[in-house]
Length: 451
Image (cartoon, rainbow, N blue to C red; front, side, top):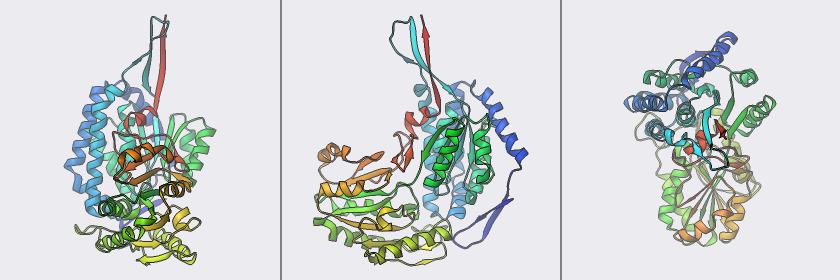
């Protein structure tokens, strides 16, 4: 079986990747376990030195890696460079903080000594998406490897070139062979991999359907699972907000990566008093964005990663219009490119409100007041994050409990940060990545008691 990497901008085949045989796959799984037995014994500081080196490799070769990201999934080249540099940051972060995260936690009891120690669990399998082909992997790999586990990656098949490069980063940095491996297999090998005795946990970033299937298999084989799934983030603007700043943040929050982000702002919930002003200024700002060849330094909006994704978004746009939404900008699609599109007067039960829209579509929604805005925000099966724009930060903080999502950002777009836990609620999945929380997901917190 072969997998082709195809440039979504010009449909040219970048490379062809051969699927691993069953024997080769089993070798990888066994190698991950063998490598783990030695890797877990490596002192934390030695692991940190290697992880620092991985960050250095990323920075020194940023153009090489950014080029592969852009060619395989269409991200503008400037954004691809930023993604690679963010991966270097997460390597540095865990190299600096793991010793503290893994330190014994002393707990006073009637014992002579009692504490919690943190042991690695073994090989962890990651199923990762194409939209941030380096970042999604490194935010899993850095804490997982620093904890003393080994990593196995099943990347999206359209970014297998990135998968090869990521494995190469760790090898170039000096990590022992087998500590991090990319698997080149199709989804039909999912149960085989989860069932294998070497694999101790699985983490998936992807669709609800994929997450449900993987979680079911993980449960069947009693393996730990972590899911980071879809999102339909609300971007709430109160009447006292600085509209110009809110618009500037909103455009980035929706159009970065051509809107292909689970935590992108998708539903713009605007109180009645500022609806018209915000929509007008947002529309003018989006008009100024330059679409074109993702390899062009000036391009701000590239293509979607595949033609079928653009077609799906177009269907959501047209159905929403048929149900009463107003087309304010864009609306056209050709091949993998979809124009930045704005729909006005979006209401619940329209696809632009109810579904995850994975592309450059902004849905403008009227709210009567702040209470109504939060109520509309909660009318979603997803729960990744919410943004609230206001000059009354104290009040916004006090109202953080009104949002059931995993993140609540004030006057800023929802974003992942190595220093903060990241994850969702409801259909957006469970578990947390990044910060100490992300490392603890794949750790054996072992109670030690001596009397």
